[in-house]
Length: 108
Length: 102
Image 1 (tube, rainbow over the protein chains, first blue to last red):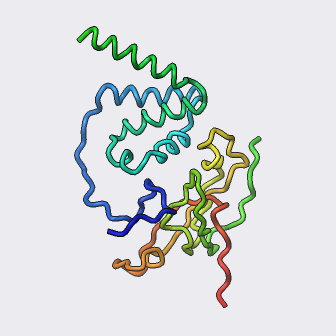
Image 2 (image 1 turned 30 degrees about the horizontal axis):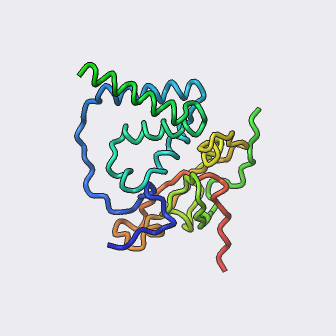
Image 3 (image 1 turned 120 degrees about the vertical axis):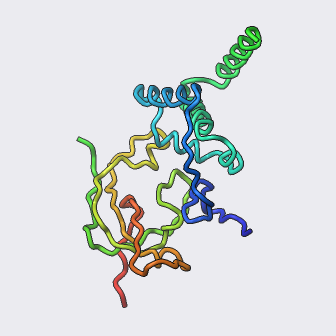
């Protein structure tokens, strides 16, 4: 296997071998629908553009890009965008995640 | 009214895609850079996504063209019909008028 051309973004894979197209349909999990809704609402509020969403998806490292699911990439990118814009801070986010985790464990 | 960059190409014009590899939110596919094709249509003008991706305005709006390439000009080992084409939508600032044949 030849090493990838460093001038090519990992996402920019047009023309590379890709195997067969998987045509199976699947239902979306509730969290995936919520991520989609979050994207729509943030867009309407002017806090995120689809171009920023794409940029932060394409900024994922190749391994993460290939292993994360579609909506995992979206929520990663939405979070990055909100951090970059200062809508949330990393500290707020970290504390909130801890609080939610504590709530989940409490209900466990 | 939005600022608009004037269209420089018309359908039928021969163009070359710039062979550039900047860091950034580039929307011109890697495989088509440096290739020669023909303007199929002007699609309209849109804020530049390379700028929108960084939360800037993307103004002036950039003309976007659908450009038609012969598959055999794009892929050196293309095994299909010689007249097969691929059409790619490309912003004006990525296109240059093709140098006329010597």
